[in-house]
Image (cartoon, rainbow, N blue to C red; front, top):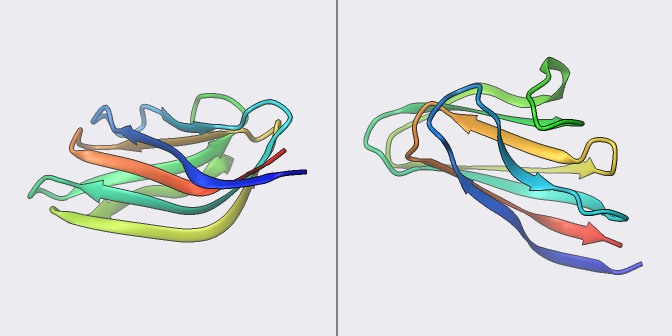
Length: 111
């Protein structure tokens, strides 16, 4: 098995809280460890954001990691943890209340 450490994905929010944007999808025959997610708000106005792990490309209540948390204007939040994703729970989803909020995810893929 090989392990590759990298930025797994990045996405700018559509600006509609509750509308799922796919931040990362686990490739076939791969397991993934998510180490850090950064959330950046480039606006001077505060916004809210949500992050979830799901078996589909839609939010499911049981999959939320963060639910409508606040991020101040011109701020960046880093979440560090060891979430694991596999072929079952393979979608990392995000949304924000403003299109000025972007997400990046870092971690490792194991094949």
